[in-house]
Image 1: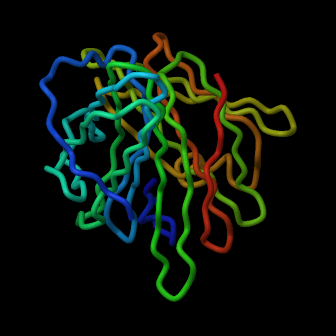
Image 2 (image 1 turned 30 degrees about the horizontal axis):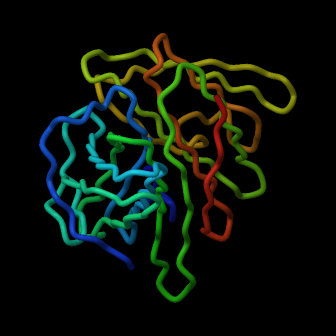
Length: 242
C-alpha cells in the first residue's frame, strides 16, 4: 500500500529452500494479494501441511505489471521459495527487508496436497513496539466483500491481484457507505497484475466514512487483501468474504 504518510512504507525462524521442477499446477493455487519488502517492512510466511502425507509446495511472486517478481528471501535464492513438508509440519520463511526502493507485489502457492499459508506483515518502528498483521491465503474468486473504516483517524488499505496468467481483467469496485450510498468505479489489471492503494487517497469520497467494498470481476481470478491502519500508526488485517 503506497501513501505519503507514515503508512507509506507498507506494506525468526527460517528454513533452507529448494527449487522444485516446474511440475506443480497453479490453477487452484492459494493466493496472497499483497507482499512487501523494504522500508522497515518484511513479509513472513508460515506454510502448513494439512495432509496426512508429505506435501511439496512452490511459491510464485508477481509484480504490479504482472512481471515475475524477484523478492529477497532469507537463506534462499531471490524469488524462489519451495520445499517439502512432512504430515502436519509447518515451514517458516521471511523476506530480508533489504529492498530499496520498496518492493510490492503478490504471491501464489501451488502444492501437491492441501496447504494453508499465513502471511505476516511486520514493520519495525524505531523507539516503539513493532507492528504486525496476519492474513490467511485464499483461492481467487469472482465476488469479494471487504469492510472498510476511514473514520476517527483510521485508514484502510486494499490490494487487488489478477491471478489469470494470460488475460487482463476489468475489476469493479463498489463502495456502500453506512448511509446506503453506493458508488462504483472500475480498474483494469494486466495478466498476473497487482494494485495496492489507501482508500482515502485513491478514492477521496471514502474519506471519513466506513462501509463495505465489493470487488468483482467477470471471471474467478480476483484476490483481495485489506489492512486497517490506526491513528497511532499501528495496523491490523481486515477479513474478506466471498
